[in-house]
Image 1: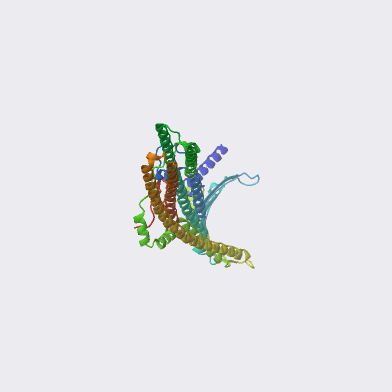
Image 2 (image 1 turned 90 degrees about the horizontal axis):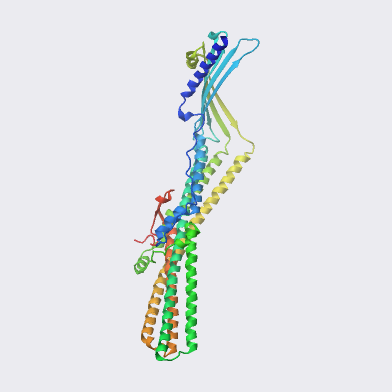
Length: 537
């Protein structure tokens, strides 16, 4: 019967401890709740193309949805954000709950049951101050004399204030600030990589467009020569004569060379199409499903040239690049993070002088039962203690702190140099690309004029001599020469249009005006018109 009574008391006191634990707020739980699951990125979730016309906007969207390098960049940003979260965790409130139940069964004295419950809070503030508070109740239960049960409570508060090293926001919050700046820099760097990737896919698109148009030029030339050969054969048959074999061989040889150029142009279409597949980040199996590019090369640049000559845009483009280039903004944040760390290390060269203030209160309550156990928190005081402690520590030589300061200073200076060099390089490159754009505009105008002149000359020569292709062999050779020059002029004009389109996209990249709205969700990114020159009113 005695044993059953003891077990009931043990169970009742255990429930007492559990009831106290259950009133602890959820945000002070024993362990942190598991983090929410991160959505898994499937880099193999590739798009299927229909084979229809392909626009530049479609290429951009496909690139954003499928590029493996963007997935890698997103993971890098998530890692930087996680690191910042870890650094912020240094200022989390740490909670601790400890419970202990023990049955003492000595051989030479009264049996005793002891229970203890201790709850504590610890926090480090961004000012460098740290504080801890604890509350505990210890019960010693005499099994023979329950009325002699001791319920002893203890309340403690400790505050540590760094007066020199480690004190103040500059020093205490430096780790968190550095991590936050780095995470912001990583995100801006990611967006800059998006711009670079879009530039790459845009250039690949224009290369593909140029290859398709070049193939058409070669096919037109081949068909034109073939029609001349057929005309010569028909003329010879109708006149009952036989054309000179040497002249026929020369024409056929020219036709064969045209066929070879057409084959080469067709191979260029496949090669540029494959390069576009790579730039978009989709499967090589989709190469046959890539339709012809639907975009047209921009024409009618006379008004644009006039505006460029009237407006001083180079200075505007440079200012725009300094403001909008995301790699410059990322470099500034990186340099700022090293400056924050340098300020901390300079402060931490000081001696460590900490002031610790502490206060404690103990109280006791006699008697068995739950109410006496809880009343111990405000029972008869048995000791109210306060204390202040001043601690000074300083390693002779202080080489660790001085070395960390010097390393931080070097890192900061390197990032300043990198930032200034990046801005200098971009200023120069904007000037180079601006001049290249103007040159491409002039080339486009000049090559178009050449095409029109050669086309007019060829059409006129053919119309005036098509009835005499057989009678005068030199006529067809003259036409072949004009065809060669016209084909070359068309290809030159096509190349100038291709390079102008790429130069326009390059200038948008250099001025940081490819993206007008940013988001880690690629579907929410807003793109500027890649075929327009930035900054023209």
